[in-house]
Amino acid sequence: LGYPFSSSRLNPLTNRTQTDNEVGLYINDTWKVNSRITLDWGVRWDRFGSPSYTDGKIFNWDNQTGNVVIPEGAQISPLYPVNTIRVVTGPVRTNPSEKNFQPRFGVAWRPWGQNWVVRGGYAMFTEQIGRFARGQGTGPYQLNETFFNNTGTILPWPNPFPAGAGAIASQSVSGYPINTENGRTHQFNATIERQFKDVGLRLTYQGMRSYGMNYNIETNKPQPSTTPFAQSRRPFTQFVGASFARNDGEQKFNAFTVQGQRKVGAVTFDVHWTLASNYWNYQNLENPYSPRFFERDPSTVRQRFVINTVFQLPFGKGKQFLTGANRVVEQIVGGWQLYWIAFMETGQFFTPTFAGADPSGTNTTSGRADRIANGNLPPGERQLNRWFDVSAFTRPQPGRFGNSGANVLEGPGLHMHNLTLGKTFPLTERLRFTFMAAAQNIANHPNFTNPASNINATNVGVISGTRSFAAGGGARQIMLRGRIQF
Image (cartoon, rainbow, N blue to C red; front, side):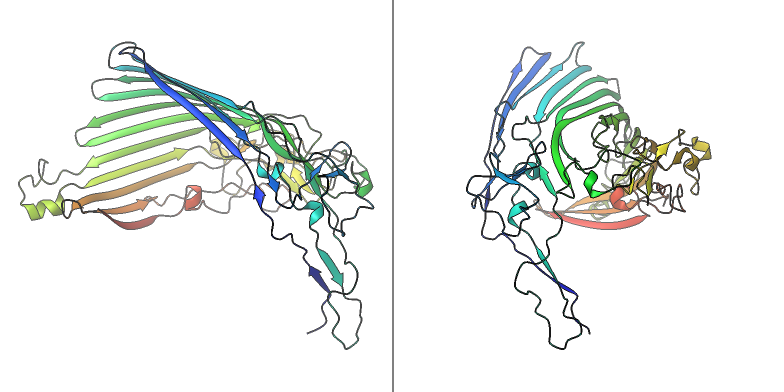
């Protein structure tokens, strides 16, 4: 079987507990000004404590000096390479913000009688800084060793863990600011509703603005250069990777929805169309030297159209057919409902990339491509074997990162029809049985995935798969379900 080439030994931290204190307070009230105006208001306050460990082993990294910071009295692992990485004592735990007041306000107003309603609302929410950025508990305290077998071809089985320390892997580190404010998200909406004789119409605007959002960025990349990458060009040569939490992320979301409802006999229609946009400025994390630009969110589609229909089947008591049926027949044919839901939406966005080279000289062997033209083909020219214009993208020029924005290409849309037949059977006064037969994607319409976006691949621009049910697609699927309620 041969001798082992190497062996590894873990040195885990044991018998330790992380503690974290969080406090939240909330008050709200509703005031009915008069028969036409109702106001809702509230205020929430949160205090997110800083985590700690019972053994006191926690650390941070100072991105100005490159020092690893530990609390006074903490003991690091004897394997940590202090000859190349300086470890100092100092404050490590974040200072919790006391300013997390979050107001909420809502209003409902009937300006012109009972058929008109105007609603509006605003709320502020505070982002809790992730635990990864508020209490790091391994770092210089837990290191693994690797031992290599250099015994040659002798017969005795080598000792996998000889005396002395084994090889220690190159170190990476991450840090966070001690004093930071929590990110804030402002959500607001306005709705106008009008009820006609048998038609309901609703117009809705939804908006969101987020400021001071937290994210991690790799800060140990050298400046882009035509000079090939070398470890000596890194800002902190003692580390392979060094990331730091920033809190200047922003996001902008807008959506406009038109919704209509109508009942025609035994059929109820609910139709709505949404136009949306969502941009945020902390997606280009491969280039830490780039200014923050607002770029599309990949999962927010531009348009979505939904039809929701409920049809009371015309059989049984009080219906068009078999209205005078006996009790047994009524139990079998009466009370059935047919549900039809149709989803249609535009495609998700994606980013053209390259791989297999390091044009920026920063040890970044994949990333965004250069964009020299639009890249999106007209809808009539998009095909499964050529979804976008591949010639619009190329590998970045030496000495810099790619200039393409994030999510500048649009993939195939989604088209689904789901049909469900259901009925509830009363068994006793309290016991009921509900039966449903559901067909998802009843037309078996293929919903394709995004095409290959790596411009170096032979299948770039080619669509080779369909979406799964988890991604909103999938082949036709028929399910029978039963439920007992008591």
